Image (cartoon, rainbow, N blue to C red):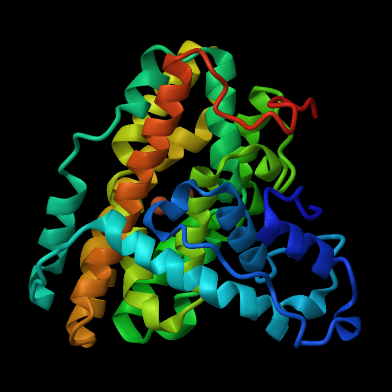
Length: 339
Ligand SMILES: [Fe+2]
Ligand SMILES: [Fe+2]
């Protein structure tokens, strides 16, 4: 993918700076100051896009950006202040949690993920959404799903023993158990092609709003900082533990709108696989990690709480757009791009 169009001074600075080759930009060239948006940083278009672009240098990068920018001090000089505000915003979003002892982590995760009460996006997609709305939903999800599991793989080299084995077991399934055609990102592409969406990596990044980029930026923040490994694992557990029921409803919606078994395989696969993954994630991964790392239980629960809170923000945003007859995508790109 190419660098997405800027949405403000921060992403414009990145767009301008990253188009040069790094040696021609001295490290002293400062990034613009990051405005104070921490209270609702997940809604700030420029903030989220700038952070997303900084992080993407560690994944696939951009066709029009030299690979040597990945660790350049000028980029890190912008990323650092962004991340400090992002963390403050996330702490506000996730709310306060009482600490629990390591053996109580799986039960605490279960309690957090079974609270419910958030906007019923999955129910709407199952029963009400039009084909265009379902297509928009897939467009939003594609920003993460086309690199599904990649952020959590950064946790693997940071673990040892049973927790490492548990994470690898989950990730192996996400990557298709050695078969490219069964990778979850590949199954997601089939769902996208059902609705004639562009399934190329990053195709919807220019069209999705800040709240959607925030979902990926949350994972990447935890993934790229070893200090936040516990939160990364808690985030994964929350994903896995809240997956089967919504995916059953997504599958029902896709069936209602005419998707074939192959086209809705992605959703059906997650109903089955995540029923297993949620057990591994809660007990073998997070429970074991918390037992082996005194004080980590708090981080595990923080990561899970951030995941759940941001999911609710996105669901509320999509439903409010659709219930007022608006598109949930930005007007910068065609929402549906024929393959
Ligand atoms: Fe998956
Ligand atoms: Fe999974």
